[in-house]
Length: 243
Image (tube, rainbow, N blue to C red; front, side, top):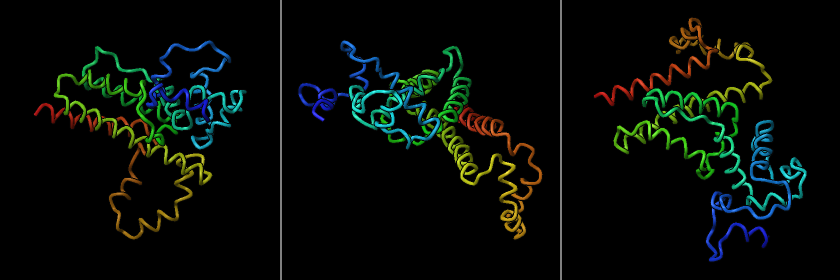
């Protein structure tokens, strides 16, 4: 433990962040282990099996190193999660600077959705401290919104990303429900819930929802649903700014 503590505290005893440590000149390598290799392996485990499957011991086995080897880079699970989230957000292509605010925010929202659906465990990492690649996202958004006052710009960014995270959480929740129930598609879910929904609709309490079930043509088009909702959010913001 003493060896572990030596790399997370400075000479005066203050805690040194993971990112400050990683930007220091690297010591002479004793192994081929790197922060990137650690992150890549941990993300691979999380993508395949979920975030709960990622442990320091499992990571060491995946990397083929001694259990304590990764502690040269991260102090434990919390810092490992920071490293993983930063690695994932490093995949995100930020909107081009030439875009206007609406195009930039729409592009950013679509790309964040794709990222979160690819790495669904990231939505559970809400306790993770901000990372460099994460902070690049609001930095780019605030630059696109630079014509607004600072508080309004942040409110716009927060509103758009709140919509993204809410919509993605719903999609991921549906996927988990299908997996738990043993259903392979939304059509399987409708069949499995048919008797339950039939009783509810027969109560006559939900005529609008019953109309939706019968008439909706895009019930399974999650991309269309997401983009339509996003455009509603952006339309509202644009109308507010114009006023």
